[in-house]
Length: 422
Ligand code: PLP
Picture 1 (cartoon, rainbow, N blue to C red):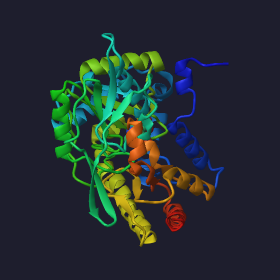
Picture 2 (cartoon, protein in one colour):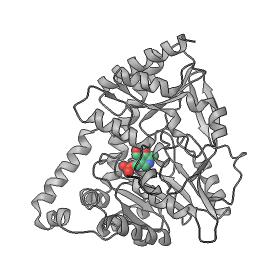
Picture 3 (cartoon, rainbow, N blue to C red):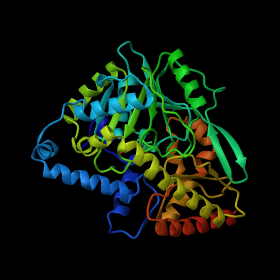
């Protein structure tokens, strides 16, 4: 049986599919694998306790329990949650949002699918537009989400070498020349995979660039402000009518609940609601009901900055220091750890490519993600000539520390072997 073109594209193996398969297998409890590959957040006791109490409260209330399992929300999402979020963001950042500026989706992953295909692809006037990533490496999960081919375009970054073991990416504004074939710009902040946090200056320049060229700027804040706030450097949240800000409850601790949030101008929200209705009928109510009181009390912000962020920041320092100690004497560099939950390791001039290292590590019981997946939209020529794409690995440190350190030992010894094989 042959599938349609759509079926072939979305029903076959994609980078994100194998990543999620690896993740599911490793976290199912039936495998001995050390999972340092996916973006699964940690199970933080204080966060889990807060949600457990809230769940009990819902179960004890007939009305809330009925809403939890027995009532469809509108396709824009749960209105009580949307109102509470609007009030919270307006109070914190003076953004002047109305409820018409917010829609919920079943996870932010599905928001990207809808947004990208809304803003790029074939247009009625015969033009064809792409989503442009001003800085790769970028999130693997974007790669396969265009309905048509040749959907993404991206720019290489500037690389600042900070010291012998640390580097940082910047947007290379000198090379950033607008093309009429770009329908929107998109950045993740903090960036998955590198943990880079675009500076306020870079974001403000991008915002002006996008406005001047009449395209929206999508900012993926899955790890960003104001929640879960996995930002270890300084970064101001930003929104205006030309920015589409995507947030999520996943990295705060609710990945299984699937709640994504889009903040945008009204026309975009209307279109998303309509797509939500067609694809999902309604958005799930679970995340909204669990978190709505946390929005009203602002506990979502205090838990993010007092519990969730310090948890990851401290863990990132310990894992970074440990890994660099294990790699002593090897010309490896880590991206400066500024946010998210990953170490992004650059194995400069390593004679073994990252996909081979991935396979060798998997055979030894450690799952990481090969960095070559994280360059969506990069031209074939750039991929061939820019060996950086074959030299990076993404290592997640969110899981149990004992396992993470054991995994880092195995990773470091495999890397050492790879360099020695030259
Ligand atoms: N954006 C980034 C940068 C991510 O890393 C992820 C998940 O790992 C997502 C979006 C999607 O998250 P969710 O669909 O759980 O909201």
